[in-house]
Length: 126
Length: 384
Image (cartoon, rainbow over all chains, first blue to last red):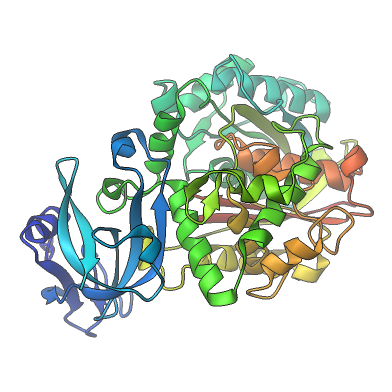
């Protein structure tokens, strides 16, 4: 078995320290968010971890007002799909930006969050 | 592949039931057998859809349980789970079993029970169909997923909240004509627009309800179907997938799995979108219907909202969509939905849909979407 370049657990350990890790295909150079066994671009199996800037822009967003039981105390909260400057995307909670100021295209920066004892992706103002 | 037909259908009333999902399936399945005019002993396999039985009923191994309650303990059974598309996935595999000649008569069905738990719990269980590491941790809900799709569609195409509301108004209007529907009450645009926000920009009336219900159908090979009273032929059944994570989808205003499954289904059937007379599609949220009408090729990308607003998808319009009332008004018992959509199209193609009948319907399409748009099934049907 080929060892993965980075596991989900390791990704979130690093994310908790403020570091976002992507993986780059050693064959064709495609960038992805881990984990991925095969490169979706060239089909090869070889990845190397790379550090991402964490800067990006909101591609779409919503404000959750009816939450699952585990998050019911958090409402309202914003979730956005963010396209990072490197071209890959991540979903995250948006914090420290007023809900009525959110818009497609708003520039945001990654920050680690702890949501109910688990590390989660967050984005705040640049 | 041999030709395959649907020769019997059965659907329970949708809404709140004080019965287990297996009981709901068994009631629908017994109706389907009676409709097919076949004894239960002719059934050679059960393909079954059930999604959150493990959570709401603490019940796994639901397919042999469903077969036992029907009174068919000996046939091979398999449970399919592709979130809300489960019984449509079951249907596709059953079509392959009959089409390949392995069996001549097969039962397909599904059932779900969720109204026995509080909404906060069912919202959580449904969210299990999104990714546990990357999405559930954020508190992402299914209205949230389609809110992201809605915002992207509005941004790219100028789709409006009023156009989305028009989908809800239309499907409630259709639902009034369906005695099995959960809601049989017309609503106005204002009802939708003034309802409370669930996940901006989606409001309560943009969302389908939680529903208990069951549905079943009997599939038969051509030899058997020729002796049936009203066979409706399966012209195609196709499936496609997309990236699991919402963030891996490049353009949130589209559902590529719908486009891929539709292309495969039209190719199998030798049909084009303009050949379709009646459609049952997956309107779990109003925006989902808009995006699906575009992905199925019924309307140009970006014009799905306009189509709803202009009445092109209403009964009597260009392409009637969701004459049953759709998931929005008929209800959405997730494990049963795909099978129930097929039952509606069979009813329409038999010409037995009464006040909601689409006139002279010869070709019908069903579209079922699973979870965060990562699974889509599309099937096409025709009559003699």
